[in-house]
Each structure stands twice: as structure tokens, then as C-alpha cells.
Amino acid sequence: MGGRVRDLGLRSPYDKVGGLFYFGRMLDKIRRHDNGELPLEYEMNLGKGFDEKCTTFLRVRYELVVEYVNHGLNDAAILQSCFGMGNRPSEGEIYMWNEFMRKRGWNDELSETLESEKKKEAMVSRSEIQTMFQFIDADEGRLVNDNHTNSSSRSKYGRTGNGVPAKE
Image (cartoon, helix red, strand yellow):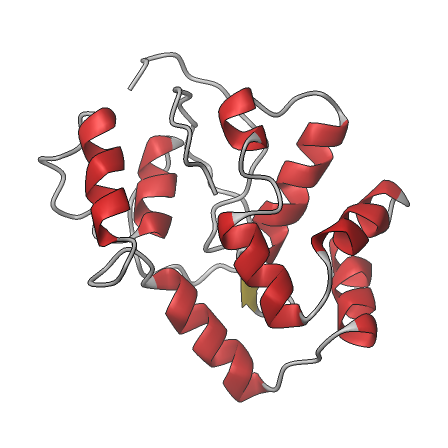
């Protein structure tokens, strides 16, 4: 890692909005981008990767979510609007979404990408990093812990910046 610490204002992918992993992080990235505060390596994946998975799950267009953010809606209102325009998942579907997302990179088609990113960031020896969510947390300076129970707070740990092009 580059060694410089910065607060990008991005939630952990484990932080929940309306019970959903990742949704709040996607909104944070949109807001930072709109304010000109999102590093280029994050901009390259806006609307792609996990953003695309999230909007596909909700059955809304990414651009619609951007419009909601640009109208100044809060997180809960944006999610309710997505539910109204797309899909209102059941508790069971939300559970499956969360389990699917938190395990991305572990024994699936993202495993090679995860190992490649760990190599780039000199984290190969960090055996506790087994998923993309764990990598994102480690990469941004948060403790790696797959037992996230506090769904509304931001991490109290600092964040580190670097030049990884595959940010989610």
C-alpha cells in the first residue's frame, strides 16, 4: 500500500442500508464522484462490478440511482425509490444477496482477481483476506473482520489510499 492515509468517505461494503450490504457504499461513491472527490481508480468502475450487481438485484438502472442521489435524497429514500421502480426483495432474497456478496472472491470467478489485487498491494501473506469485501476493507485501512454486526455505523478505523484500478 502507498502508506498515505486518507478518508475517502466510503462505507465498508458490509455496512447495510435497509438490510442490504454494499448499497450505501455505492451511494457514497456516487456522491464523492459528483463532488469531484472520488479517485480515478474508483471512477473507472462506477456503474460496473458490484455497482452493476446491486442495481441488477434491485432491477433498476444505475443512472436512475445517480439521479436519486443528484436530487439530494437520503439513503433510505433512495432505496425506497429503487424498491418502487424496480424490485422490492423479500427478507429471504436480501439474505441471499448479502450472503452472495460477502463471499465474492472466495472460491468463485473472482478468486483470481482477488489474488491478483492482493499481489499488487503486497497483501499475499494476509491469509485472513479471502473475499473482495475483506480486501476492500483492508485496502481502505479498516480491520478485516467478516463478522460485521453494526449495520449503520462507519468504521472507526482510518483508511489508506493506493492505486488499485479494480475498486468496487
